[in-house]
Structure formats: structure tokens, C-alpha cells
Length: 397
Image 1 (cartoon, rainbow, N blue to C red):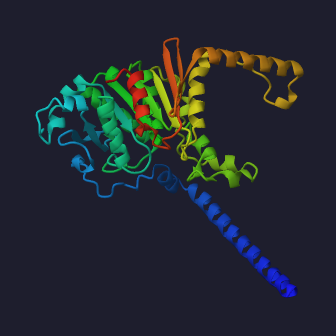
Image 2: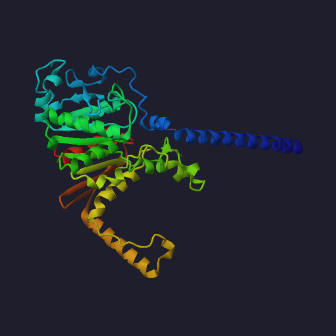
Image 3: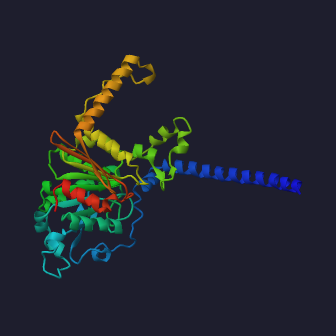
């Protein structure tokens, strides 16, 4: 009897091993195929922007009430870009202004009262992440939060190639769209000081580029909010995990130089880290620690880049760490200690029980805030605590 059991085990085990080898061989083949396909610019663009996912499907953008917005509160219209595209957009009235209108308001109330509303209340210009449209329920919830808890108007656009907007998305194209949206607000009566630029996920790169452009032109707007940002597409692929479980680049890192070679084929850089220090208005960075899509370490890096110019510099040392002398090591450690002590003196850390931690830097006329929440996942902007920090920092409502 024991002999028969031994034989069965001998037969079963090779079978299991064979199936396992087959499974992982197929899985590896699929991974290689996907990586090769991502080198094709057309496929790469569709994966980054996912603009073909026009959720909700067959949306009636001219009927925003279908998506939860109040009667006459939203103006559906098109914005013309300098390169002759038209962008679908919604302008949503602040609750404070909307409630001052006779009830029930006309379905065209937002359009008729546009200029007056822009003069009456500040406006959030919102740049959404990849995929879907301005009518996506989670985005509508954010508009409603901005109009009620912040008492701001909201301008939400769909980039070129998204929703009912013309064209195809590109890094330069999205930045052009952002500027066209800002210019539309100004041409209709808003003042730059009353415009708060807010970006989420992919939209943080768009928002940052617009903020840098305006800062370089010495246009003083109200501020910049980055929710769930990433430092650059180049770095994002290193940290991105599918569903927060499978690191995309992990297999490539096992092949010398393969990961670096792959990243040279990236057509869209969105390098916020290299430009963020040019922003000359108050900046709020918000990230949830349980964000499974984009690691909160990206926000740490952006915050560090913003405050680094105000900290003691580190003396340049040889690139090869192994060649450092004991004296150089000692100097480096002393400089790092001084830098850390200066950082601790300049930052005000506020513990927010059951919600998160907020680090505030306010010196030399600059205000930079990093809010790390315990929850919120990739939709940290939907948290009321986040909205309250925005309201307080930018003097809204």
C-alpha cells in the first residue's frame, strides 16, 4: 500500500511541475509581448491616456443634470484652442452664487450669469486624470464638493481626444488645452488671483506645466493643488504596480540595462519634478498612503524638491561612492545632519488624528504644504478633510 502511494506521488509531482513551468513560460511570453507592444507609439499613447474609455458611455454632456448636478447650475460649452481644436467643457456655479438665483432657475442660468459668477466667487480649474470624461461620477462628486464646501465655481475640461473634444492627446497638446482653458476664464471676467489650479493624477502634470508657464510670465494666480501626483512618467514606470500587486518593471530589472533601454522609448515624459520649483504661488500636494495606483513617495519627492532650495546645500563629491575618503564621508554626514536640522526647523508638522499628517513650509514668501492621508486611495480629493485643507490654505469660503 505504501508503495502504491509513493508511485502516485512520483507521477503527480512531475505533472504539477510541468504545468507550472508551462504556466510561467506562457506568462513570461505574454509579458514580453506586452513590453514590445508598448514600444509602439500608438499603443503607448492609448495606454497612458486611455482616452478611448469614454465613461460614462454615450454621455449627454449637454444635460449635466443627468449626472447629479442641479438644474441650470452647469454650462456645457466648447473652448477653442490656438491650434484649432475644440474642447468639451463644463462651467459649474458655486453653491453660494447658485442659491442666490430665483428658484427654479432657468436651464441656461449658468451661461447667462457666467461673467457675474466669475466676479463673485473664485474658480477652480480642474484637470482630471487619464481615461473617462468630465461626467464620470467620481469627478462630478469633486465638482460638487468644490462648489459647496469651497464655495468656488468649477471649470472642468476634457482634453483633446477625450469625450467630445477634438484631436488626439499628446503631452504638448494637453498643456495647450490647459492654457486655453485658463485664458477662457480670464477673457470671460475672472482675475488670475481668483483662479485655483487643481490637477489629479495625470492632470497634476498638466496643472504643473500650466502653473510654471504662468509663473514664468509673472502671472500671479491663487495657487496650485496636486492630488495623487507623480514625479515623471520615467520614474512612474519604475514604481507602478498593476492593481497595486504586480510591479510592471520588476521582470525587466532582472536583465542588465533592459529597464533603462525600455524607458528611452517613452514618448510622453510629463517631468513635473524637473519644473516644479519654478512655480511661484502657494502649492498643496495631497496623497493617500494607501494609493495603490501611484505611490505616495512621488509626492514626497516633489515636496522635497520644492523646499530643497531653502535648505543648506550639499558639497559636490565624487560620483563613485566607493572612492570617497574617510574625510569626505565625514563631511558628507555633517552636511546631511545640518540639512536635516534646518528642515526640521523650517517645517511645521501637524498631526490630524485618524486622517493624516500635514507638513507646512512657510518662509521667504513661499507656502508649500504636503498632506499625507491615511485613506482615500487614488481619489484623495473626495475626502472632506482634503477639501477643508484646500479651503483653509487658499482662503476660500
